Image: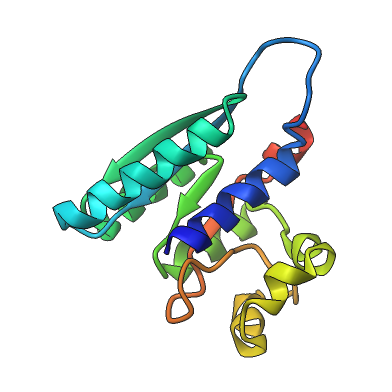
Length: 162
């Protein structure tokens, strides 16, 4: 789980171009996540977020967490219905969110990420990558687990901000 979340956040960093900037402004990334309900998972996720922020002091990670993935998806769906989307949404396998975000033009096409970063693609089963493809053959999600490949969707304007 930790490795996959780091891959999701790494995608965001790569796509944002959050390397050196002329100003001291931090890159802001908003993130919705439903972590599953147990205090052990919550503590583990908080540690992952903290480690990410320590390794990336130029990034301000704004996390909205819910103990239940379905609650997180309800909140994300509410935002999508009024034309808003966080930068990263952990969909926990709720494929309908990714499909709707893609149809509305909010989801970022991540196909190039997998094509350019073969070490990431090679770390997943070929079938897992194929299940990520939408009807147009493009990839808009990044898996956080093999059994739930439709797990992370990014807002398309994230790339335009870079």
